[in-house]
Image 1 (tube, rainbow, N blue to C red):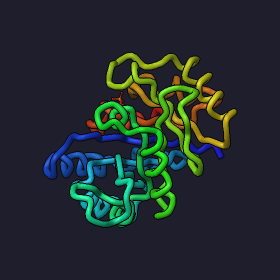
Image 2 (tube, protein in one colour):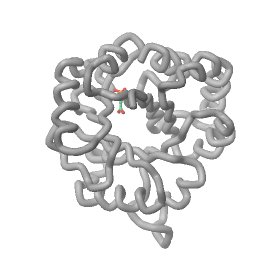
Image 3 (cartoon, rainbow, N blue to C red):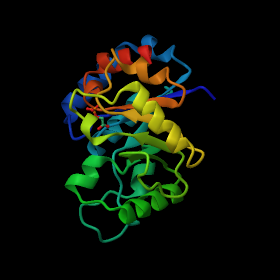
Length: 219
Ligand code: PGA
């Protein structure tokens, strides 16, 4: 019940070669994260890296997530990657990230469709909300509170404020709430030691595998 979720969002970084280096380094220090058995480790690389990450992590307890998915099933939707394709490699999918809302104009309606498709194919949505009132589609269990001002800014929300928002979200339903936004290996445990935050979604600080390992250890 007290399991913490530690999610790495590699965003639109790393080509094949850089992804390979990340993996080699992360796996070289396996004993440092393997021992943290009460922490669920989830890594979300770009679509292009999912197959190589999948092979590298087979036989380990690291789970994979996509960062997005098509709101459509397979079909004539040029450029889209659908849930059935993602399911070959990943167990989770990030939906509703503020960067998707901002740059790709994803509305609550579109995001609701994405959640529906994810659930249909057995993918667990990691649903991002920007505040305590952001609508959450039915069927979501894992919610990441990510205030826009804190993402990539070096200015995280305060643990007290983040905990309060996590509590408010939990009062809306049976959600497990993570915090995301400028999480570092230095501040991670100020969030994970609060009463209501059950893990973190990490962007920038997960790009270096050794920093990400320190986050896992310090959480
Ligand atoms: P950040 O990003 O850790 O770089 O602030 C978090 C996120 O966008 O998921």
